[in-house]
Image 1 (cartoon, rainbow, N blue to C red):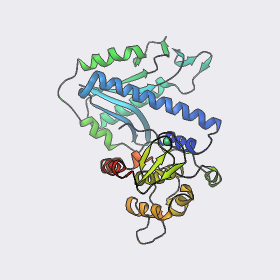
Image 2: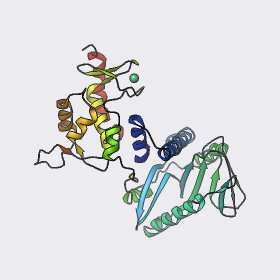
Image 3: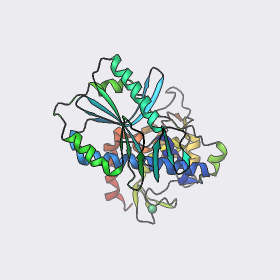
Image 4: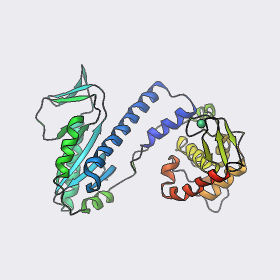
Length: 328
Ligand SMILES: [Zn+2]
């Protein structure tokens, strides 16, 4: 599962409960566009490569202190493609080693960034005697934007309409033999993706809307039944899941601190039972100090779907309850 970076999830959670500053709103739109671009490219890969695909998504590695992030790494025979996905808007021109749109020249050179990744991967593979050729691929995923190359580049740069042909050229060429030696090596150097440096201050936390919001329409006025919460929009959710989700949301917003029961109770507001919150914490979260009952729990700073990624199947069973117990 491709995941949003923490910064995007954080901005999303803050937006749900308050106002974003202009700068935050801009970052939010840029990151959201980037993520949608990555998903769109994943879909194209699935469509044209199907199960022949041998890839890793969203890889952050630390090789001897050099940290880099790749949107996708694809392997075909002896070639490793390091793929950067750009969901830019507008028309771009690459000339004299710099990227321009209109009169604006980009300070971060996407080609130079790609080359740096290639250098680091080359060192890594050489050190471990992996005989693989590494190629950079820069994908312009937005069908309404274009890049024109004036320089002759060794990198593969694809405009939207060129993506299918490129993927098909790989798919025709794929050997049945599946090698995963490179995957194992890359995973050895993998580190967690970048944590956001954005922080919600205590002052700002006080301003945020409290309570549980409907997953579908965002409304905070939910009717509480015994096992479910019901929204005026018609959406019904299992109570236990919404409590878990809201605790994770608190953890995401306050990712720089441990989960603290008393703060979480404030976050839920007056309409929700402190006992139910307490029991949810005891049953599903890891206490920071097993011997001290101080109401502090481990905070992974992630949305519910990522935090409980491995337990999602058991939650689906819980979710079924709402169908037969929604009359309570
Ligand atoms: Zn709703």
